[in-house]
Amino acid sequence: MLRYISHPECRLHDAGPMHPETAERLDAINDQLIMSGLDFVLLHSDAPYVTREQLLRVHDADYLDRIFATSPAEGYVTIDGDTVMSPGTLAAARRAAGAGVLGVDMIMAGEAGPVFCGVRPPGHHAERDKAMGFCLFNNIAVAAAHALAAHGLGRVAIVDFDVHHGNGTEGIFAADGRVMVSSIFQHPFYPFSGDSPEADHIVPLPLPAGTGSADFRKAVEDICLPALDAFAPDFLFISAGFDGHVLDDMSALALTEADYGWITQRLVEIADRHAAGRILSMLEGGYDPGALARSVVAHLKALMGP
Ligand SMILES: [Zn+2]
Image: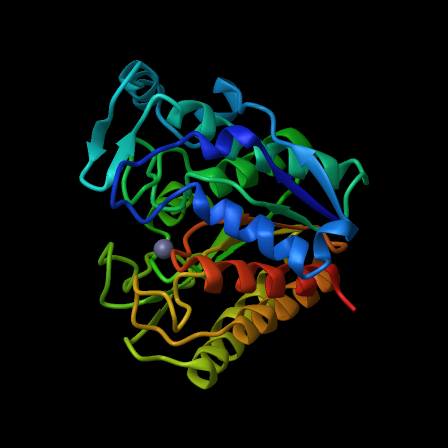
C-alpha cells in the first residue's frame, strides 16, 4: 500500500498574487487522485512539524533563527527574489519537512511500503544557509539526513527529476559520500548550476531545452541507473518535480505523464534490488495544475507497482 503524507497547513503558504507556486497545486492533485480512483487505495497520514534538531542536520542554526524570526504576522516578506513568506508559510514549511521524517520512520518501522509526500513549499533549492527558488527548508535533504542519523543507514541516494537543478540538495551533501545525488534537469536554466560535479557521488544529468521522451529516457538509462546500481543505496529518495512536462510553461523540456511513470518504475526496481524496496518521494515543482495532477497519478501508480 502506498502511504500519502500531507497536511492541511501545507495550503496555508501564500507566495502572493501571480506566483506560480500555489495551494491550488495540491487541490488539483487531490481532485485527480479522487477522479482516478487512486485515492481510495492510498493510506493517508498527517505530517508532523519537523523539529529543530532534524532541520539542524542540513541547515545552519543562524539560518533557521533568521527564517523563524522573519515569519510575518501579516502581509508578505520577500526572502530571496521569488521566495516569499506569508503568515502561514512557516507552518507549511515545517509540515513539508516533517512529512519526509515521518515517512522515513514509517518505512523503517515496516509500517509503510512506498511513501509520497504531497507537500509545499518545495525544498530542493534551499541551501544550508539560504532560501531560494520558492524553497525554505530542504525537505528531501532533511528526510535523507534523518535516515542516516536516526536509523543508522550507511548510504542513501536522492534522484531529483524536477526540471530545475537541485542545487540545494547537491550542495548540502557535496562533501558527504554516504549520499548519492543525481539531479536530472534542463541546462542551461535556473539556477544555472550543476554542470560540473566535484565528487563521484554527485551525478548530474543536464539536458538541453527541447529534450523529449526518448532522449530523457536514454540519459537516465545510460547515466543515472548504472550509477545507482553501482552505489547500491540502502534507501532511495525522489525529489519529484513535474515542471519538465510539455504543458508546463515553466520549462522547455517535453516530458509526459508516461515519462514520469517510466522513470518511477525504474527507480522502484533500483529500490527493490538494493534497498529492500525502501523508497520515499517528495513533491517539488510542477506548475500546470492539470499536467501536474496527471503526472502525480502516473508517479503514484508506478510507486505502487503492478
Ligand atoms: Zn522546478
